[in-house]
Length: 202
Ligand code: GTP
Ligand code: MG
Image 1 (tube, rainbow, N blue to C red):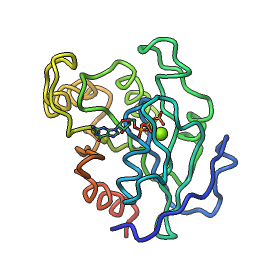
Image 2: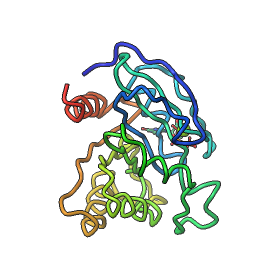
Image 3: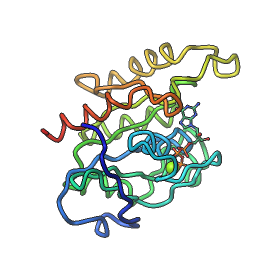
Image 4: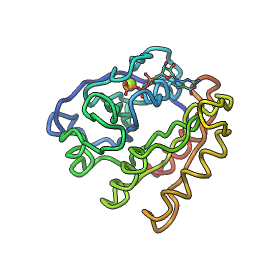
């Protein structure tokens, strides 16, 4: 399940512009700055394949990266930043919604949640939207390397994760699969790649 090759293919504005070769794909979604691009780089063991930034809003389009010439990782723009005036308001870019509902080769959405801070309303709304629309989902908890800080509610990543899972329980018949990760230590990398290979059936 390891990555032997990874190449940037294209950036698309709309679902209709995405690659049409039918290869299966996994989309990384989550709040701006949660670590989507960093996770992608960790998975493919490259520092700068996907561009990252301390400033939220770095990724703007649907970016396709072809892995091992046989499947795609997709880096999407973050939510909860440019388009949302309030943290608690779920405003979708029309094109991401369209992508989730129409992209036939999408095997599973990987929803990234920052485990170093308490659950955010916008993340709960996002998870609920995906659940209601029955979009297959895997939860990826990021920044699990971060130690607890008073200003972050004083909880360990494990505690934040437990609370998040209990809060989304009501949106799902069964808890979605979830994985703890860190792009700093590469925690969770092999587990994600194995999970993706199982979802692809090879
Ligand atoms: P947008 O493209 O703006 O939506 O952001 P993104 O989700 O792609 O986040 P990005 O990967 O650019 O990372 C945002 C910031 O978080 C950067 O400063 C990263 O170095 C940091 N970061 C990402 N993952 C981790 C992690 O696992 N641990 C720690 N400590 N920091 C991380
Ligand atoms: Mg990004």
